[in-house]
Amino acid sequence: MLALQTWVLRSGGRTVLVDTGVGNGRERPDSPLFHHWQGDFLGALARAGVRPEDVDVVVNTHIHSDHVGWNTRDADGEWVPTFPNARYLLPAADDFHYGPDNAYAKGARRDDRLLHEDSVAPIHRAGQSVLWDGSYRIDEHLTLESAPGHTPGSSVLRLTSGTDRAVFVGDLLHSPVQILDPSCNSGFCLDAEQAADSRRRILERAATERELVVPAHFAGAGLVEVRREGSGFALAPSTVS
Ligand SMILES: [Zn+2]
Image 1 (cartoon, rainbow, N blue to C red):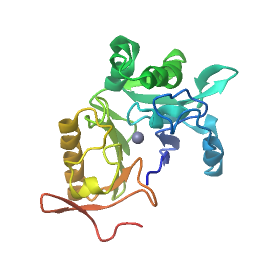
Image 2: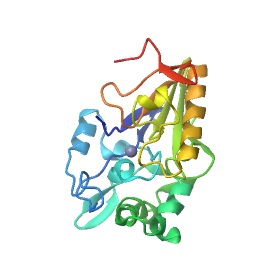
Image 3: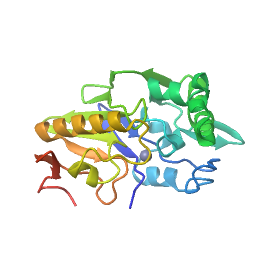
Image 4: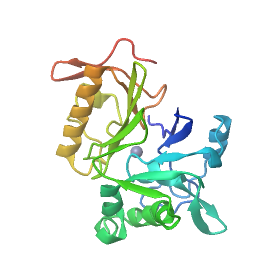
């Protein structure tokens, strides 16, 4: 069972969204679950106390259709940024891979062109995108860093606040099984070996530095603590359930 999560962070007086779900009314012929999806994302956001104009920073951990959808909304047939005052942080490697200069991932899937056209290109046209590579410091508490493999630009967001530590790992993990055996990839990881390397590296640091691990798709509480065990890792006993 998977959840699609958007995390809302408050940092230094700013409101930061991590990933933006599927979006409404998209053409996604390769993804029947997401095709013409209609959900109450903005209502849920309002109930969490966030209006679109309040959002200062949007983080897309990577450019897949379930992570960039609400970047934009339909305004009388035109896709426009949902968050008019936000800068959108996009991994440059994914923008290239799924963008027109690489023929929309070389035309492997129609959805890749469609999602770039309706959820990414309008952000560029509005002048609200920031492309980054390697690492990107948002403020004293939040830093993005590359963790490629799932996609070429996949990234994680590290949070430090006082003695608290967390890492938002996007699609580095889809299932707790991948904590027990980090060599297990999802069917969506483009570079299997690199994805497994990134997963192991990020989990090792999370175990060492006691970072709370926050994936994009875990159901329930949606976050876990990990510790080393054997050649892999285990869910720490204090894991939130
Ligand atoms: Zn995903």
